[in-house]
Length: 301
Length: 224
Ligand SMILES: Nc1ncnc2c1ncn2[C@@H]1O[C@H](COP(=O)(O)OP(=O)(O)OP(=O)(O)O)[C@@H](O)[C@H]1O
Ligand SMILES: [Mg+2]
Image (cartoon, rainbow over all chains, first blue to last red; front, side, top):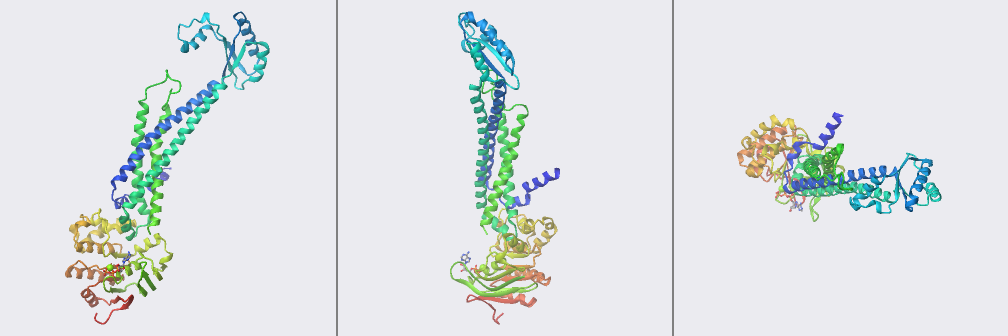
């Protein structure tokens, strides 16, 4: 394994001797450094977005899939009887793990965020809520609805799927878009570095000619450029990644207040993901410069 | 080593020369003369594979130039040391590194150390080793170019006006170096206007003198 890595590194880093043969060209160096840095910075955010929405999608789908609510709206004198009847039906339904009528206090707590703490709950004709937890197998929602309609006329089963599915779909779409953004960033980095490499090759046409005259092969000449651009992209991306990670780390904690923004950023081992960005940028630069160099050298015979 | 058979060359327009045939064999010594613009530099470029003949066949170490890849040409050039009329240095590298460049590009950097200093001393440039090419005089650059041409111990040394900017004494020294290399079996091909140089050489080795005239390569007259 060590030997393998050494071989790959020497291929990438090349020959410092060859590097000296090409004079440093100021503006392409800065262009590459800056592009790699800016793109790495953006990638950190796209990565954070993807990971956070991924977590959100997973949480929503697992939390919501296992719960449902039964709502009983009936004249006040019938509520208690219908609740009992509904609980009996639910206990007899296969696939339902627990069914529990919520207490007045719990219902009040649920409504509090919307109406404030001074809600005169007693005077309002509130429906009774029954909290249902499914077993892993789940229950037959259509069958349950039909039976409830016959036996408990005031019951409405809300299994959350109606509003759960679009949310989960949106979250996983957002995750996909995050990864697409990363792919686009990589592609534009490659394009920018290709341009910079071509400019450097054009600026050094005379140097390339001299190297050819003394017997340099294409790979030797290409290596001088590849090494330089790879190292620059690596350095720029490292700086950009660190800046992006610091920016994410400094985001105000949104945990208690917000629903969506909760945990935008990295959690635990997720902090290791951005460390992949600099080597990835180096690989992109390596491939882009090598392709540009070999293509240019093929043209200038 | 190098064979030209019925070679012609033109830069797009009229033919510069045609029906040129010549074999450069190990240990041979050639001079190439002719008026300015006759095509001496062009002829030499055909010999080291920089140009491809517009007609006829040029063979480099047994391979037809037309069938050679860029890498093939690169490898052939490592066996041919060339002193270019315009020197062709990397202006951002010190003289010593420029002279050692053929070793660097062929991965033989290790051989540079001892050789390089001797060689620079021989062409009288030991003191200028750290200077950049643009800081040198024309003659100093030409001597450095000769040093670079011979550092790989090539089979053939091609020199295009190597003594153009050099005083007579230094020309004699460079000629002695080339004659010495020729005695070791290296082939030498020198393009020059300097008839005195040719006469001096003929006193030391048996050299063939060729002349480009009227778009043909002919043996030089008896005046030499
Ligand atoms: N790259 C080129 N494109 C078009 N014409 C060229 C090119 N190089 C040289 N020529 C023309 O070819 C002719 C021969 O040039 P060349 O350099 O071979 O002459 P030369 O014999 O070496 O001359 P000199 O003694 O002045 O060095 C000249 O007329 C020159 O203008
Ligand atoms: Mg010439």
